Length: 559
Image (cartoon, rainbow, N blue to C red; front, side, top):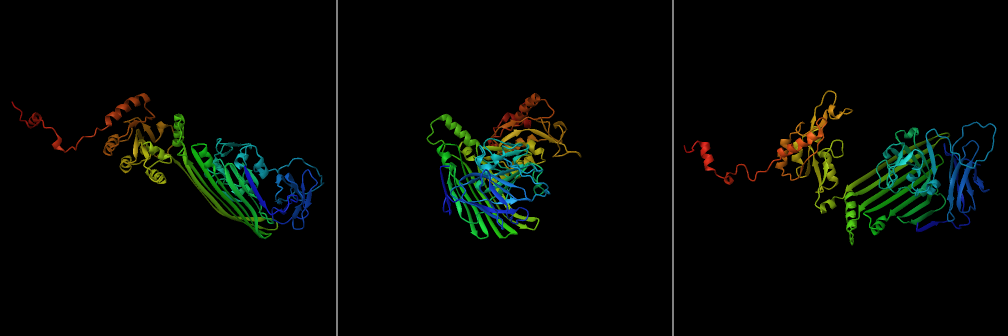
């Protein structure tokens, strides 16, 4: 951080207070006469009849706060930071202890003993996130250091739990599912280099890596339950931070006696720094987060929560301005040609209602989320250099037929450098009309793979047949001339559309020896290439007259 401004209506930095409420986590009833102490000191307090407590004259620093009451599990919130410029609200939610007390023994414990969990639970508080070495206040980086968790690469925050895909992780914010927790990422993945959540608003994180709770049973690898702090009910506080990569504003304020608001807005300016450093990519991210809480009474609590992000990853097209080093220019051009343009936006909006009964509670959730992620190749660079980018139409891939190619082309606004690699063998295996395909996409076919195939369905297998070696499959590739492709018709079509590219032999055969296939394939293509006639076949005016040949045909030769 290079600049930080905080604002609060606290009158004096010498009179910092820590306050909050102590409630039963099951029914939200206040717990009176509970003990709260700051570990390692003699400072503490006892909650009043309404479950509220106040600790005055707390010096700035990091402390462990311990809350205990007979019949409830002790709750310790570790390394809570107390700032000298604002009061701190710290709430405790105690869970009932069902054990019957016999002989009571009081024993101190230096370390916080977490509750035993049959569901592979690891609880991480806000202080651990902030102080984690190399974590950069990012939750994904923090959990990546836990046992059984790995990362995909150094430039992303994807987490891999027990070998599962990053898309197998689920994220919930105060009970509301969110599609992602990082900028520049994909659905269901942590991914991306920067987190979207304001760590200052996070109270703790429950991280499940197996045997998930019943209401999260559709998870595959992990569940991350992120719990936000409660809004400040007494005073307005907030901050404005100007860092090396972004600027952000946070606000924590009461709106009425029964409602509070948490608000965070952030915008990056990395693109200016990266452009000054002459890097080939220019990332920009923006995010907004809010939580509105309304408590009409002790039995009901309503939360309205929203998150929105906009990410823009563009290329530095001016990187070669004033650049004289030819090697550097070549490297820059290579990067521009291979990097993708990534544009992403996502949002989550939701509402929750928790109703407390005497010994239980009901939790209702209504939400909607959406993530739009687009990655584009820099086709303009190809256009500037007169290069067509050809995508092979291939079974099992995103672009596998004409419809999928047209969808892709629409996303690119019909870019003229987006074209096809035509391979008839892939159409045979999909039972498509490969000749009609040429007529439809004549203007887009710029590359041609000459490869044969055959499709022989049976009562046991068809297009999707598998678990067999290639020799025994219904659909298999063959050496040229041994399959079902009508190459005579194809080469005629190519001559008709005036295809001026290469006819490239791509040899794959489950039966024939490759050397035989290569030798036969070269001759096969040579024999099928059609030399275009220089004039129409019925243009007799351009035909030379051979009198002797004509007489011979008519039987008029001189005897």
